[in-house]
Amino acid sequence: MRTSWLSDHGGAIYKVDGAGAKKLVALDGAIAVVALAQTGDGAVWAATMPGAKPWRIDVAAGKASPGPALSADKPKDVETIWSLAAVGNTLYAGTGPKGKLFAISGGGAKLAFDSEDKRITAMTVTADGNVWFGTSERALVFRFDPKTGKARAMADFAGNEVSAL
Image (tube, rainbow, N blue to C red):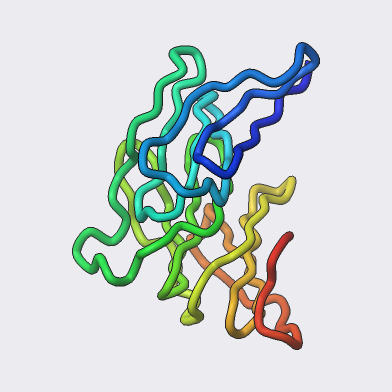
């Protein structure tokens, strides 16, 4: 049975499967959940507004705990996490207002790439394990290779935002 995760406007996260939808947890102080991803260890991660930390949801226990601070040394660099994607047990977080990509694993976070745009608004992982992400203000699409730690611009679209991948 396939399981999906969704959120409502009040920061609640639901587990949806063949048996229906069940509220798993509500994230205190969240106006909205803007992104969800599940890592290989089964944890579900949520990005909320407002918030510069991802939330880790223990699915079995139905409990949420804040993840590591992103860019703790420069808090103005990360005001919101706009997108999430997972490769194995590593979570990738696309942020704004400085357009930075962070890798989160083992309880810590490190800068993986600086897009030099304002926000990383959309993200997906391809079968080869690469993380693709789109930005806003310049509407760029990048491919990030976690094995090499290198990113490459793949497309530059007209308009000002990549909203989904």
